[in-house]
Structures are given as structure tokens and as C-alpha cells.
Image (cartoon, rainbow, N blue to C red; front, side, top):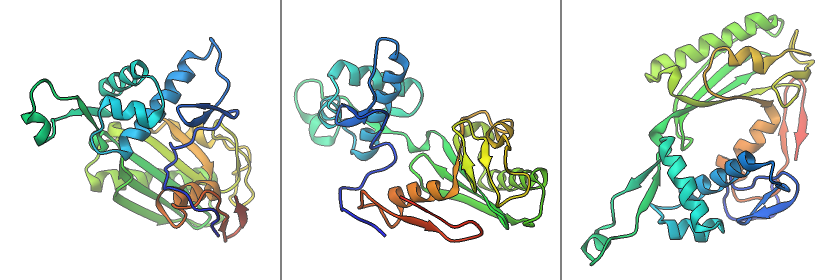
Length: 255
């Protein structure tokens, strides 16, 4: 079910910490001890604007984000150094005008890849995409619902290796890995309670999977992850409030 309609947004569109605003985005109360957090928030806001705009200028990004021009310029330079943003060629009309045209920038969806992993009672699956979310590879394998955690994780590693091999993508090219799993998941990826899978309660799932990757690995409850996906790319892209019901061994609604 979906509720109130609003412009389409992706997961970077709102960053909620404690109800304060920065550049039109809800953020937390920042103090002099939070410079790295502030930089990350500003980078996320600018990156989201770059992903949604067509070769914007610094002036465009300042207007869209509500951040100061020096802040936007510093963030863009940092994103360029990280390979996520590149300067675009001037538009044809601008190139003919007198004087130097305004610099334009483009988000590089080709600068890396994202990997999504689903771990369920009867199968494990993996999806590979560019940074724009376009799927370029997928795979899955069945697994017994009684399989112990080591066997289930071995299946995950096999599926991941197969998907990367078939897509011709090196593991070092992954920018982030997202994992959906049944159970109550702590911030560090530990499954605090997971009755749907044998040996899952107390499993340090994030730590176990991080050994296989050089990029960040984020573990989330599968229903929560699915709700975010539907809000970003699926049936709920035009809604602020949704209810997602995952029907299975351990059904549970998510708002």
C-alpha cells in the first residue's frame, strides 16, 4: 500500500539524524566535533543532485542543494578526485558564446559497481549493478532450509563469484555491498535475533561477509531493504509513506 504522493526520490534524497536541516535535507545537530560527518552529509546531498540533474553547473548545484558555493565547489572537487564525478564538455550553444563557459559536471555511473545479496531460507541470490542501479548481472542458488550458517554462506560466496565472473567485473571494482537477511540486524551487521535460519541468532554476518570484500558491506533486514528498493526503483517511487509486507516463513510488515 502506498500513501501521499510526492516527487520521485532515491535513498540519498533524505538523510535523517535528529531533525535539523541542511540544504533542504534533514540532518542532525552538528557541532565542531563533527567535521567528517558534515563533509559526508554535504557529499551525499551534492551527489544526489548530480545524479538527478543533466550536467549541472556549480550555480545549478548551489541552487538545488541550498549549500554555499564554496562548499559545493569543495565537495565536487572531492568527488572528482574519488572518480565519481567528471567535468562535462560545454553545451554546443555555450561553446559558441564569447568568454569561458561555465563548468558542467556529470555523475559517473560507470565508476564502479554495486552488489546486492539476498539470503533466504530456500535460496541465496545476488544482483550486480552500475552506480545508477541498472542491473547487469544476476544469479541464485537453492539451499536447504536446514543448512547450517557455514553452508549457507558458502553458497553466497559461490553465487557472488559466479555473478562477477559472468559479468566480467573484478571484485576490486565494487563500491559497496548490500545484504538482505531475515531477522533483527544490529548496525554492525550482527543478527541479534534470527529464527528463520539455523544458527542465525548472534551471527556476526557483517563481519563474516566483509572478509570477502574490500568495500563497505551493509547488512539490513530483508523486509526493510525491500521497502527501500520499492521506494527507489519500484512500485512506491511516487509515495512518501508505504507499507511493505514480506510474506514468507517469518512475515512482517514494514512502514
